[in-house]
Image 1 (cartoon, one colour):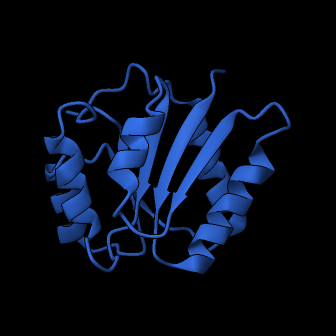
Image 2: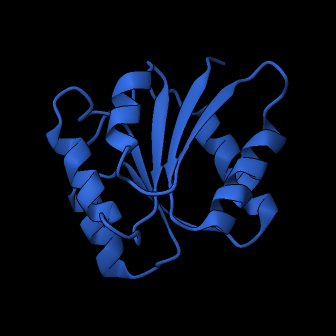
Length: 138
């Protein structure tokens, strides 16, 4: 399994810690995952460009101050150097209009944030099993 870079933007400190703890629990000392955490989307695009790897994915919260996840997703899809970078919208919202808009704007997947640590671990393990090198936005 090749090393995976996860870029995660969320303004909720508890969610950031929860996600980080889950990533740490599924990775071993051989560092299969490099986690890049952002407390908002302001520096996310620059971070993706600077650390762009062959096997990477973005987890993006929808409800953030300054720029929403929708706005950041649009910026990623409009930036030629990173527009094919896989994006998973990771939100508490189960609203159909949020899901539809996310997918219409080019999100690869929409995941509702689990409240259970075990479910989050399973989701991260599933994400780790995908070969993001060959995954395309459709």
